[in-house]
Image (tube, rainbow, N blue to C red; front, side, top):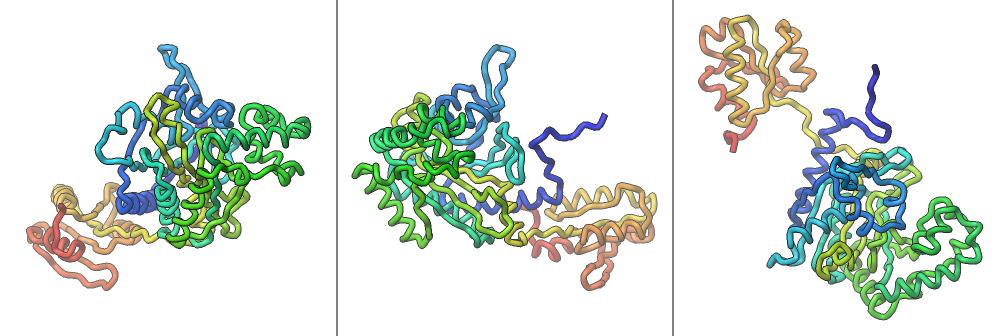
Length: 429
């Protein structure tokens, strides 16, 4: 039986995994500089969390969730996005009571969405995201956007476009909703089935429809910016001013609504403009979600965040021909020749690893020539050669592969010698 990975999933093999590790480590470093702390939440949650938090009218809840009933009859769902889970953890663990506010969090999560797989969009996807809970300051909105842009820029991406919009407060949204219903109702029968349902449930979602994007009514739809009250308009102006102060270029797109019900005020997307990247250009998206924490049983707590697909980030790096600074060289390869040397070789590899040295050896019983070929394939910086003669004299040959220089070192001193060569004399801390 030929069993393959399920449709919409993919294996990340060792060579590719190094890129993931590099990217994730760079991102963690950036989050540390911005003073964000990591949070990890369960892979599945009670289905109600996403129904209430993400919204019943969204495509995620209606079409894309992996939902199942456990043996106790409880409805559970593999998380399709990260914000609702983080908000639930914030409420359950009473993080709103911490002395240090706002609470700034970041995460790396696997998400699950049942949608049509395509390049950079899988059913099991990996996402980096941040959430800031406890501040309604527009400067926080700018900080969150700046963090996302910094990730892309420090990894080397240049072909980026930042698009922002304001969805306004509840009053503004209500007035805009009425205007959209009035505008689209005469065209209802011409819209797709989903948009016909959205007209009554959440008409703003019509603007985000992929099927009806070319319908004439889209280009003449009213703009949310014309329905912002004074408070919402002032808020948006301050966000734009802070972004300008940071030197971040952006475009305002009144049709940017995002696909989740909990957004209000600031919404944004970051897109790749790299040639050949693909039809779906969005790399990251997010926005403000005041009211979400209350919706799931917490106190009045403003929030803002974003989600960034790791797969799409790697695609963008490839589209711009960006090489990641990954050291794929092995530090040391130990060539052991003869049956008598095996025990000493195992001991030496163990000791060097404990002293902070990256080292490997042969476990295939190969001849000396084949072991040297293995060292070449691993691009080993040094090769240690231990034969029965060396074992008898309690020495080992150390060869620097780049120069070909070779010297004989006491077995007792080889650890210190390797530390000086590779670690500057510093052992494992």
